[in-house]
Length: 261
Ligand code: ADP
Image 1 (tube, rainbow, N blue to C red):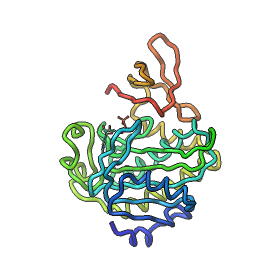
Image 2 (image 1 turned 180 degrees about the vertical axis):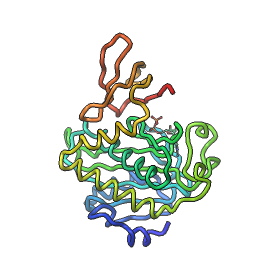
Image 3 (image 1 turned 45 degrees about the vertical axis):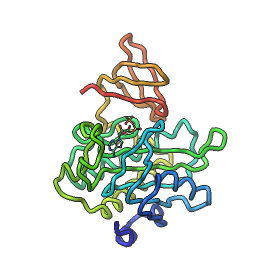
């Protein structure tokens, strides 16, 4: 990755003005957390060529072979922990929009934290908060994009559910250019978020969503719930209509969602 090229082409006001680049890390989120504790500025971005222990939610592993885009953004928002999912939604909207605009591919967002193309995951997002009581001291938004590697770089058990931009486009993408656009888009939505204009993000998310009005199964706190994904609320929580007509709101942190196509 040519970090100098990113620095020269980045058109953001503050995001990514400080980029920390590594050939290999355990997880960019972990490195970002340490840097945040050391007091680096909001908007610092950690980028790595590969992660040895990339993280998904609930302690799951995120595969991060060379050629991908593995980055974490350090933020210091005024945020209650229960609002964290909004940053997942914001990041997934930013990623899906760039993929649509740049490559004319129909990228869709899946609650709470994925971007899919043809129902296969091309990007995963992990927003984590370092908290003080119920408020976030810093938030780390990790974004992992399957960019320039073949599907064979992923373990066999993921090949049916995962894809990469290279596989779909049959060519490599300009990762530096993509990162510049992604940071610009993320900054735009984050500024809206900071000004309290969450409805813009939520309405964009709904337009890009592949789950609304579909039958879904949720595993949540040891329980299985089935119903229709009806909407998301102002905090980004998922609203599900159960068969018996009752409505349930689901917080993302401990929920895993499967969608019927
Ligand atoms: P889920 O999407 O299943 O709710 P997460 O959002 O926590 O779970 O993402 C982690 C999961 O994503 C892993 O358990 C694995 O199934 C899948 N996965 C791991 N690495 C990749 C990757 N690079 N691309 C696509 N899917 C991946």
